[in-house]
Image 1 (cartoon, rainbow, N blue to C red):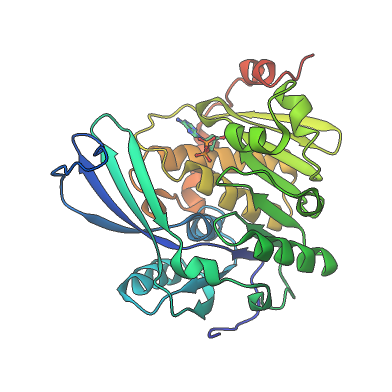
Image 2 (cartoon, rainbow, N blue to C red):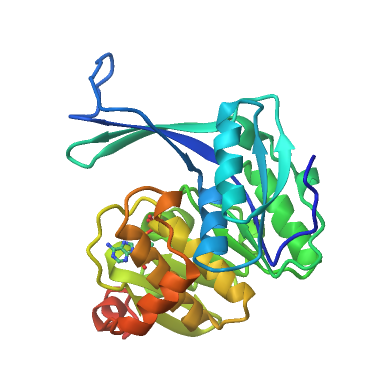
Length: 315
Ligand code: ADP
């Protein structure tokens, strides 16, 4: 391992992928070749996107543990993360850097193949010392045994853990019991607790200490201990919601690491995510902390009544 500086206030341990994106008239069927537009090569991966969001939108002192190959894609990711001011705990793998092959159709559908590559090599022994880390942010694009080992180590060191349980899958109860804040979308919530009952009831059944469900342009709601919280989405002219979820998670982790309470942290996260939806791209769409602060100062508070009803909070 190289770059073993002590952990920042936010430590993200997770995936980094280079996204190879082509626009095409339609998604190719099996066996079909489609002529598309120019290739765009952009830094992505849930872990890397969330680290950039914590550093930029959250203004937090941020470090990231990640595994990269020894290839040109690694340089694309290192440049993006370092230019956001993120300190890297870098595991150099003999496998290729993670990649996502993405076709976006003119009808705004997409088809994505992910080559996990080096991300699969992130192992329990790679976790750096957690001294000075205020929140550890995890996702599910790295091996689940590694995610669980990191959550266990954080609990032993009394460092709170946020798990963004994406992509969707069922999770062992032991892992959920180690999570201080679980962040899921509706599909990911269903993969963990099923579809029976209202959203508010299901949020209370995850086994994590607190759970947030993000609901796209509706906003998000949360159960923290016994308290229900709702934060409606800010109204914006959305053009591309690609990294909205990752921006939300990174900004949320940064606010919590700053000592902000959960309702105020959700408000900042929602503002950062709304701003990211107004710009194209993943990491390139993430706003700065100053932009988020200015947006919050100039924007009316959205009405959360429809959201609270959708989540079954009034029952
Ligand atoms: P994911 O992509 O992980 O499914 P969501 O689509 O739920 O995530 O978006 C995460 C958050 O981003 C939402 O809770 C909301 O605050 C914000 N957001 C998403 N889409 C929009 C939108 N069209 N307008 C405003 N905010 C949005």
